[in-house]
Image (tube, rainbow, N blue to C red; front, side):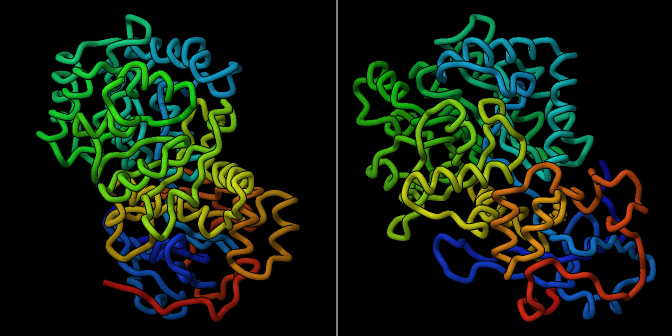
Length: 472
């Protein structure tokens, strides 16, 4: 799909991260009446509307969202697209949930027609929730990978995915062999990695579902294609830890299973990490191995409470992103994920504010995926993936944010009370791919205009928090 080449300006209250708020105290910039100027799918300037408007070409389209926030598009650091249809399915624990719901859903994706329909719906649901990039499992069927990447290309989304490698502990129709998994993954990687905005992730399901030969084959493939990501699960439940100790008695701990096969380091992304030890977290930090916090699914299945503040300790910070883990996670909304992360943090004795929550869902996940130079913030030169958020989307939000005292206060309210209704619009590479409004003329919604009228500011944001324009 060709990139949008004309000038598009999205006006509202842009805010973005300049650093990691777990490591520094002033990590964010914002402009009360500002704009994001996009051209050819990239951001060419961000700044105050009053300073940008006279520099715009006459042909520029201005889409004005009075009172709305403009953020970098959300980045879902871990999810499973084939499990879309079993969201909110009841089970007693993770093994029961896999057997009763997840594996049957993945088996259905062996039908190419079903896989294509699931991929189309999955991508649309991401965009409806403001998510512009996802790192997702497919299934062990090659057709499931082809279906997802094709759907992402139609929308020009940045998508990272891969065929699941799994040669034990599952239904026969989902299992392959180390040799076949390597061969089919290599073919898919050559076909899709770097095509459009797609990226490939070598995807062993998790250590209990893989023999040592399968993990070694994954490591060999990654060494041959270091530009790909490595995506798997780790330490989600205590029962899983016991299973790993039984299956890999020669390994020191869970992380060592992956280390032994060359599956850690920059570009390795592991979901959960709930029960990792301090020694394992230290090795993640030293090696550049990233974790993705999936609080919604951990709460839903009772896997445990990830200690985010231990993982991100300034003494040896691990890179951490945020994931929905659909369908064990019962929502596509990373706003709901922020709320659940806040609840988990409180149960761990910490307070997760809105600034850190939004960081995890944007630049944090982008950093975990090795894409912070392209997505996750409104930095000039980045790809123009944006989400427009309405702080008055529901009566409760409107009442709460109208009394907010600062932008961080608004962000916390959005993180606790927000969901898909909060998403006004989603832009992918400078093109609007989702709009909540029924029409462009909806009162209080988007207006396509070239006027120079002042914008209604976002509740709680002071005029002196803005920055000047930033341009190439």
